[in-house]
Image (tube, rainbow, N blue to C red):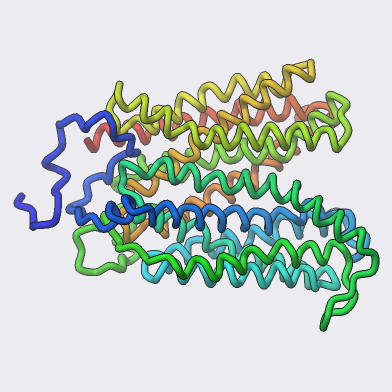
Amino acid sequence: MATQPGWTDHSQRRGQRPRARSITCPALLNFEAIRVTDPVGQQFRHGAAWWALVLLTATYTFSFIDRQIINLLVDPIRTDLSLSDSQVSFLQGLAFVLPYVILSIPLGRVVDRANRIRVLVVGILFWTISCVSCGLAKNFWQLGAARMGVGAGESSVTPASWSLLADYFPEDKRALPVSIFLMGPYLGAGLSLILGAEVVGWASGLGSIELPLIGAVAAWQLTFMLVALPGLIMVFLLPLLREPPRTEKLNTTNNRLSWGEVASYVWPRRGVFGAYLLGAPFIVLVLYALQAWVPSLLIRVHGLEIVEAGRYYGSLALVAGSAGVLSGPVVARWLASRIDPTTAPLVTSIYATCLLIPVLVGAGLAESLTWTLVLITGASYLVTFPLALFATGLQNVSPNEMRGLMAGCYVLSTNLIGLALGPTSVAIANDYIFESAQAVGSSLALVGGVVLPMSVLLMWRGLAAIKQAA
């Protein structure tokens, strides 16, 4: 089949082994034609793409600070607003997650059709105002509505940022920037505790706090307002970026794919997309389970105080988690020189997940504190190891017209499976299988031993689908 000027027919390259230097997750599978103009490469050489990466990573980090800061303010909020533990847990979880998940796919569709930087700026402005509103809340319902606003605004971050990064960076240079971007949650979670504690301490020392036009506010209310301010900085900085041209598009005269066209593209490649949209959430489930229950493991089983447990696990998770996200692409690049580069990312993820299973089981069953901390460090490293590879892989197998949508689907699946089931599955095992508060380690080991092999199986099927399509 003859190709038009400026287009590349990937079917001509079948049967040829790609260069080993490429670590791209499964190449853009069987696109009828892909645009090969290089405005992105020019931006990459001149550093504009890296400046965009800095701003997008900062945005992602600030979003996690704003969503996680409430975890530090539970006791004063509960006391001042006379809330129950169930009401507080709703504010921490469902109030944020429901709009975040529900809007992820619609906003993904918007990202695929509209100016992505504008979508992101509107989202930042919305969640920043909502975070400030958390500080103005006087009762449970007002705080709940404000938290929903934070979730709604932050649902724009992943679809818009993933799509932008895919166009700012060429396919063979995409993995490292995405890894850096995915450090945002770990930086944000850590900074929300470290900086949040400083802000709370400072605000608490002010005594009675009176703000113009607002009146008296508590220290926790002022904390919400202050942590929201960096969002305003991003609202002014992000519009300075240029919206990159959309590359790697399907050969279609219509840039807006219908749901039927999306389905007709995804269904024949369901094994590949299933590896990312179903395999990844089970790993994220373990990540959330660790974050929710490791402190309790250290407190209940090993006798640490709350502050000690927070310091130990917070430090280990921050360092090991960030290192894991950055290491995945490095190992995949090394492996790509030895096997088919199009399969290297999934193979790397499978190896990491297989290693994670015994490490996690050992961490849950270890009797000494030292071994528990060592194995938790290993588990925190390995559980984040595949995340950048999932992100780049999903973008690489998706045409430009679908990248925002696929990012939204990723947000939906990882939150519905990972966030909804991760902490809960350990609690259910603890209450109904082992029937002991001291069995939290055994529950973690059981959950990991069940769900991680399921992730490996889904990734293996995706690997087979990639080889079949090659």
